[in-house]
Structures are given as structure tokens and as C-alpha cells.
Length: 249
Length: 322
Image (cartoon, rainbow over all chains, first blue to last red; front, side, top):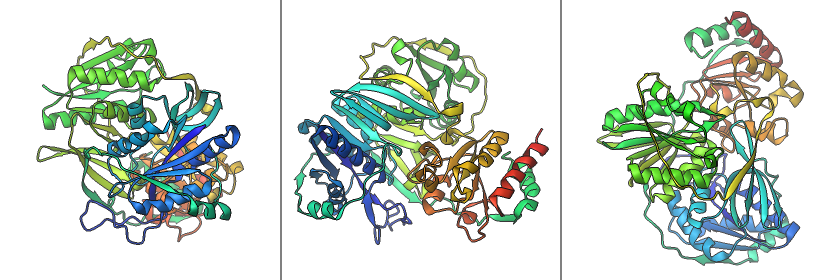
């Protein structure tokens, strides 16, 4: 099995996101960068598959040299190779990301391509779907279970209020949803080995961004909530407020 | 006259509620931009659905009926929409930001060499330019974006618009489109136990956190959910512990929700959780710790023990309900 896992470096979920002075980007000062949490499920699943069937896992990510921190973290989990597609910054428009990734994936002869179901920064949820369209491969987003049998696979895909059981042939593209597995911790040995692994740098010709950020803003600030009272005595008043004032019951 | 194409989603023989909300959103935008609105219904045996858009004021219905569209096949649905778009040349394509809608329109955007604003909560027009507002970082930031190519495309988050009834007669055009062989096949649709509503589509959500102490206490959440017709949600530690299914996890690495009413029970209110519920219309917090950050995010709060307050709340709603 030759598996690619496409990952993205994102701000840690603990981060209080601050808007930069241009009002169009975020202020990156002091941000702790991590591997997108959904991508860790993807890496874990890829590693489990090669542990079972043999093969190698290649990490691919798009961005400047600063993203090598998270590429090394992915390698420390046990991935074998890594490719960084050089761009001046991490692209915003998923059209650009998909195009860059596709240029490398086309040449890689991969049996399986994994992504996280979305990156928790821009929340686009588009790259998996766009890649399958560009590469003309079977695609199952949001998988919570995957079984492989030769060149056939079945997966459970999450839908609203349930799952769909899907069958498809490899090569294919899937995106990982929470629930697929529990990502492993990076071992000290893994971290040491990852430091020595080569990150291959590739160039890609990029299309223009078509989604343009006009303005970023904080969500409207809420006044602190009104404490109705203590314990069960406050319940009748809460219910009457929800019915008559907020009109949500 | 150019048009806004609303791609509908059929589940279990019915149009999803988010479609009706988008009919209203599209008509409002159409008025501002002088665009007509057409609803596209894709499925198998859909004759019973073609009048539905008319109830919400959409006069033009396009339908593609094919056994290959009975269940969601990304390949066949993409091919159908791309062909409709090539024939009708819409200015804009909209769909619900459901799991299906988000996948499907991303593929269509790629195929039509345009771009997609995903999970949009508002569409506005300023100086003739269409502006899409969409949450990023699960709602910590709201981004206004524009799309420089056509058709402009967006998925709209459920509950962002209120569906307005406006009965009108419809004209229906049945389109015959050749569909490819599907690359992925849905063998089976497995409903979650009890056929529960998904948190992203629920109008009311009752959500439990670590303060619920264990899965054996969830009947308190479920009882309240039952009397209010709500879906049940949870915070991340709860799904990480395996007390509840991952599908219920609300927050930055789970689901972002926009219900009318969100009741947080025994949830302290970590930044990731608050982000995921910030577009709720009304948030109620029940927590024994008066310093819990959830009270800052809430509209109303009760400081108290969830094990006492929850049953009392369920009873009170039963008692005062019709």
C-alpha cells in the first residue's frame, strides 16, 4: 500500500484568534501551531493500514518552510516520507490548495489518499471533494470506519442522523472524521527519527485565488448572561422567560 | 433573466428543511439582484416533490429523475448539476451546508472552474457585489468573502434563514441527463438508534458536559430533549470518554450548531465549545460553578446542581406546555 496523507498546519484549538491590522488576516503572534486534529485521524489510519498490509506513508502539505514543524510531527507518528509544496503562504482558497496537492498526487501512484475532513482554521471542507474531481478517483468524505480487502474497500460515512455504508475500489480518496480511531502519541524515538527524515520540496504552478476575503470580524459580543437564580427555585422563571421573552420554547 | 439555482436535497422521499430556508434566502437575494430563482430536484421518483418549492415562492422547478440518483452518488450528482449549470448558465448556485451539500458543491465548483463559500450564514449585497458571511475557526471569527468567478457558489448553514411560505404556481421542466457509472456505491443507510435528529439540523439542543458525571445519567438530558423536541449534544470530554457518540460532539473539533435554543448542562464552557455554539440564538447554562465561563456565553443561567435542576426543568416544561 502506497498511501498519501495531506495535512495542514493550523492554530491550536486553545488559541484566541486575533484579527491583524489589515482586517483581512489573523495576527499570528504567539500562536502555537499544530497538525490539524482531523489530519491526525488520517495519519493514524494510514499507519494502521501499512502496519497490516505493508507499504509506506507519505505526508504532503502546502505552504512555506514554517509548516515543516507540523510535517515533522506527522513524521514522528511514524510516516515514512514527506513532501512540502512550496508556496509563499498557506493558500486560503481550497481551489489553490487542491490544485497544488493534485500536481504532486498525480505523480505519486498512490493506492489511497487520506485527508482530514476539514481544517479547523478556515473550515472550508472542500479539498477532499475537489481533489477527487481533479483526479477522477472514488471519494468518500467523513469516514468513521474503513475496511480494505485487496483493491476493494468499504467505509462508513457520517451523514446527518446516521451513517452510509459505502463500497468502492482503490485507488481512492477518503477524509477522516472523529471516531475513526484514536491517534497515537509521538514516541521519543519517533521524534528523534523524524528529525533526520528528509522533507522533499516541490514547486507547483498555482491558479489564482477566487475566494477573496473582504473583511474579518469578531462575532457580535454578547453581554454576560443573566443569572436567573440558584437551583430548582429558578426553574419556573427560566421557563416563563424562554416561553414569553425569548420565545424559543 | 439570469438565475439563482437552488440545489435541493431529498432524504427519505422528502425535501430537507434547509431547502425551504434557502428558497427564502434565494428569493430575497434575487429581489435585490434582479435574478430569478429555480429549484433543482435530483432523485428517483420525485414527482411528489415538484410542487414543494412553489409553497415557498419559487416558481421554476427543474427536475432530474434517475435511479442512479436514488441515493447520494457524488459522481452522478456532480455530473447532473454540472450539466444543468452548462445548459442554464446560472449566476449563482446554492445548497444546504449538509454533509452532502458540502461535498457536492465543492466538486461542482471544481468542475465549473469557479469557487465555493462553504457554510455561509448570511448573503448580502453591497454596491452590487455579493458578500458571503461565513464563520471560520468554528465561529471565533466571521469572514466576509466575495467570489471573483461565476457561477458564484455557496452552501448555507441550516437555521441561518427562516423559511417563509408564499404559495405560487410552479412550472416544471424535466431534464434528461446522461449520468456516468458511479465510482462509489451506497450499500446501506444506517440510521442512528432511535432515528435521532442531528445537532446541526435541530431547533433545540440539550447538551451535556463532564458535570453529568457519567453516561448512566444521560436519561436526564434525554428526558428534557423529549419534552422539548430537541436533539442531544455533548462537549468534547464526554465523547472522548466514550459516554456519548462522536456525532454528538459540539465544538471546534466537532460540530458547529445554530439552534434557536441551546441548553448547556454541566458544561464549563471551554473556548472550543463556546466557538461551536456561538451562533445559537439563545443559550441557557446550568452549572453549579458560578464562575464557569459558560455563563459569559449564555443568555440565561441557573447556578445549581444539574441533577436537581434538569428533572425540575423537564417537569416545569411538561406542566406549563399545551
